Image (cartoon, one colour):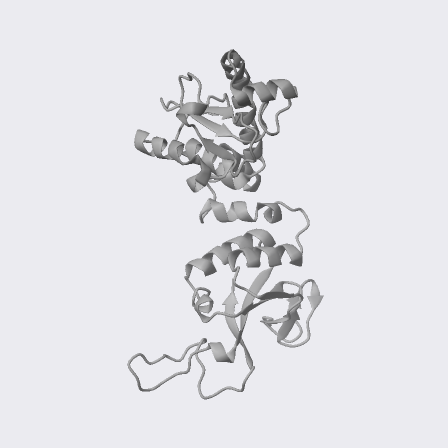
Length: 320
């Protein structure tokens, strides 16, 4: 972090939330002098308690020359969790004398500010532990992400961006897989889906090889005929969309389709096949035109003629 940006932050701390301010400093390697934060930066900050008793309008205050004692480090004031100030826990007479800046209070205030900085910095560290998104680093390079990815056989075996796995990690790590978890995964990959419906026990017609009459064998039972219907190995996912552009992302070899396919197969395993069907209003689909500057080609997402108002189309997009 360059000194110019650091100075600009110190000149306008009121524009930031406390956690946002600390996260911005930490992400640019500013040393908050906390053992949990290892930084080699020479830029160091001191948090002090706002000593005045007026109603604070923000969580942070700029360090003005008349409000700062002879500190060696740059100072930013906080208006909460102070030993002195509006919510101070020290005796009232001591808080009042610190606010009036009476003679001899400089050393006591500086002494209390050492504890205040430690409390504020540790408060930020504790808050950050409960907000995983602030600990995440690109490509899941942070320690917590690496530990979480070990629950699904580590990072090396992943074929898509690890952040997508981390987003549905609680579902992937469940022992009992159900339709509710599958719905959450579909909603995570396709947040624009207005409705997701899972249909179980979809019958699939399989041909039964017969070398001679009566020799067709499947699932250790004799089969009469040339075909077998199996309803235990396939489910169907219906996704209702209100945007035609999302449909184009769900075709074969599209990035959203590949992410959905990877996460769904990771969730259901190899014992089930998953069909994807999109439900979309006919009014959202473009009409095929034989003339025009940009004619629409006939495909699954194009209509011919004028469909009825309110008509819903179901578009089969294959097996994931």
